[in-house]
Picture 1: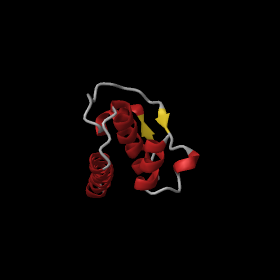
Picture 2: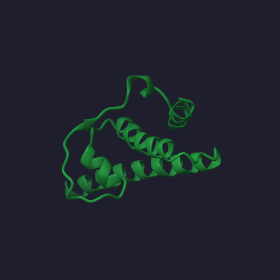
Picture 3: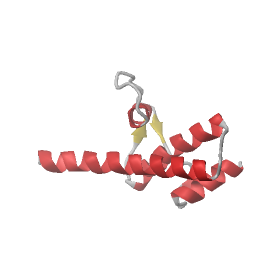
Length: 99
C-alpha cells in the first residue's frame, strides 16, 4: 500500500518534471526571451500535466513543482482552460506564444 502510494507520487513528479523540461527545451528552440511568456508557459505546462494525470493542482502544488518553498500554503485550485484540454503540450505552448 505504501509502495503504491510512493509510486503514484513518483509518477506525478516525473510527469510534471517532463512537462517542464519539454517546455524549457521548446522555449529555447523557439528563442523565446520574454520573461512573462516564459513564466506563463512553464506554469501552464504544470497545470496541463496535472490535467493529463486527472489530478487537481493547487497553488501550493505548483509552488513545490517549480522549486518553491513548501511552507507556502495556498489551496486555490488551478484548472486548465477549456480551450487547451484537448491540446498536446506543444500545441498549447504554440498557442500561448502566439497570443
